[in-house]
Image 1 (tube, rainbow, N blue to C red):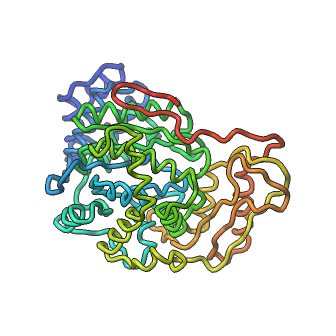
Image 2 (cartoon, one colour; image 1 turned 30 degrees about the vertical axis):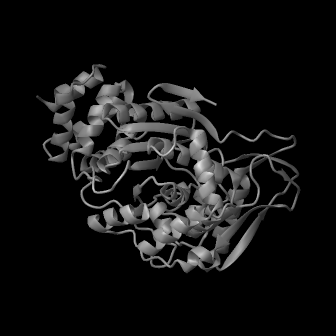
Image 3 (tube, rainbow, N blue to C red; image 1 turned 30 degrees about the horizontal axis):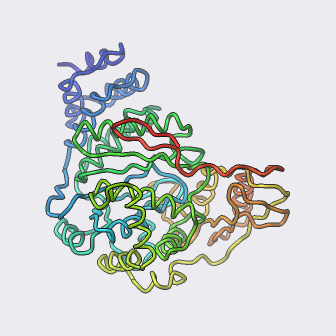
Length: 443
């Protein structure tokens, strides 16, 4: 078997065999197949695509290329949640304690952010002392006792994916649905969960800008889950504006605490209830979404979800007093208001531009070596559909920067992210579709 023949088969639109895919992945990981041949294959996939079976085989090979986590020491059905990313997406900080309070173990391995804002690990490290590193035995013990743990990926997880993603990033082959789907799902499968709920974002602040592309990606990932025997469903949720109001690490932790206290932005609470309901159904704790939603709302109202967050923070050496007094979390030196210049209604908010503005304030990483400022970010005062008058505050910048010229540029970027209409506008739906192995249900 030769790599050049496999490249040619895919270039000509043929379906690759399981053996060919295994040969390619193993050869690339061990160095027998060079970057230039793997680049050619990735470009062939970009143009010719892959079948569901091919994508499933690729995912399994990448998952098996390194360490695989065995979660069998944890009792119950382990349900994982993965988001394809977005601006202001702090759902894991809400869902891990909320779903654990309902009796579904959440053994979560998360990452750090590169881009708009920090990842879940960065956000949790806004809490003084919070440790995202646990030995395997500690991890299993905590999930069994507390119901949840959130840690960084350790060991040699999916080295094939790491190597291939680095190559795709510099060869213009990142936005290939089969390659995106296999990249995401290989990590989820290697992480050992029994069932997976996917939050696939769509819109201006999402990786997939159109609903059709978001559904296609969701279908590909659900197909992979079915192929490898993991129950998988995907929710298509809106990212045409930031989720919630806060964008930035400590700001997002504060907002997650608000939601767990039964308050907070309605859109964030609703998305968490929808995703959490799916997790409870897959985890066998509810017969349907309606029952699951009622259970989750009960845990928000009686304080048990909030108590579960305290247990999570305490178990990972975080300062629990900051959960009860969020004003003691990292706070920026000053705030700057971005004000509307004309009257009307907020018709659109370019979520990606808001995310970039937050990154420029220091809330995210421009490079892997960038140091995040956990205190800074943006809090929105107006969202789509809200009326505005000249002088009304659209957003508040939480700032430690002293470069006034850069701050003016950031203010202008945030202002330009808001589109104001003379006429009333319809608020976009939060959820567009549910994708299961049975098909797509549009809302």
